[in-house]
Image 1 (cartoon, rainbow, N blue to C red):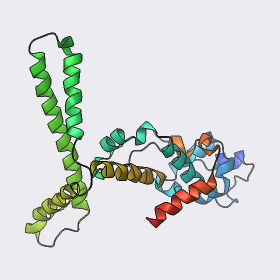
Image 2: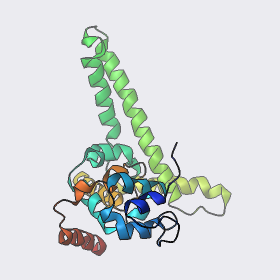
Image 3: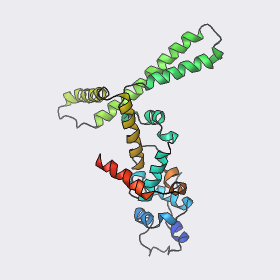
Image 4: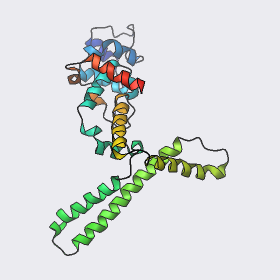
Length: 235
């Protein structure tokens, strides 16, 4: 259970009055406080601000954005193509292949590990389980996409047309996958994942281990950071 944020802790560390007279108050104006003092707060104290700020809010701080940028450029497994496509399938606009890969994994497990492939029926079992896994994963991804597409459209006033609107929205998303190549779709997806991570828009991403990690401040190339964000704004 998360404990309540104690604003007196960072104040005492910085030798500032903890009687409520100091502004900006870390408890009531945490973003203003971080903007003024983040660079001098040690990670174990800075990380306390996760209790009173969101990942999206913290993206307003250049130091935080720079840490996330350097983390993203380090090619972490969290943001790798395969992991990201599985974690955020609604952002993937390429052709559907995730289910096929899951099916191959299931088949490989049966052939390689289950009874060490020693019985005459293992081959058929591998194909069967692989097919089931492919179908389950593909349907999971399609359902997530349908929900994302439905949420992106304003429902019609006519109740009878609601289901048609949802189906049409899902069809639009499906048809978009045929307009770009797999390579272009992958590049676009990887860039989108990096951008959303930097701006705190990826749900269930591990932001705390990056936002408060001072190691990402080493060899800080501020000019390179600004160029990256300038290019992003131009697109």
